Length: 116
Length: 113
Image (tube, rainbow over the protein chains, first blue to last red):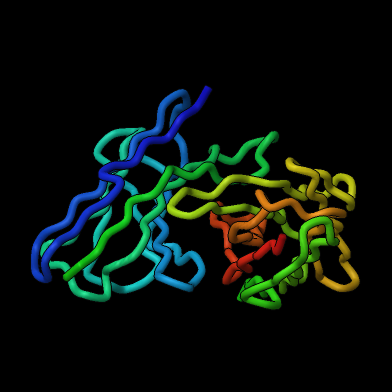
């Protein structure tokens, strides 16, 4: 069966420090990968998605970046964190489109980032 | 642009009462539709999904949702609320031409004893 792992689960960082959140998926090949952010009291905002190694699409301008160095690894980074980067970050995956594709996303457990 | 609207950021019901969480989508073509549940400090878990088969979809934990094209709605219901249903619920939509899911802003369900 497929599983998705995110780490770290909790992170407290000072303003201006770097960030690296990691996500890995097991039990599937060539998944679509996504990073969402959930700010307090708000819905989910899609930040990045990837349909393959090295292929990253950004949904909103920001000081965050994403990379996909391996098929099942997705990394969210920042060189200098801002206070507004605080939030709950969720990694997710779904299958590549095909005849049985129904699009549902499978989510990791999330990483809570607090920028002070 | 595709969008999902959830009416009511907070819904409060008594234990044993009917749960109704509203979701409307904007699309000219019936999309894939989903309901997810999120417990505090956890990821999202799929409750149910509509993929153009039956319009009444049954999910886990006794929840169900009905797709109504004429109303562009996909409301979530449960006949009798349980304390363990207290969580945040998200409706999401996906056009079959895109991999991306568009989420509503969420509805927090409170269940009173």
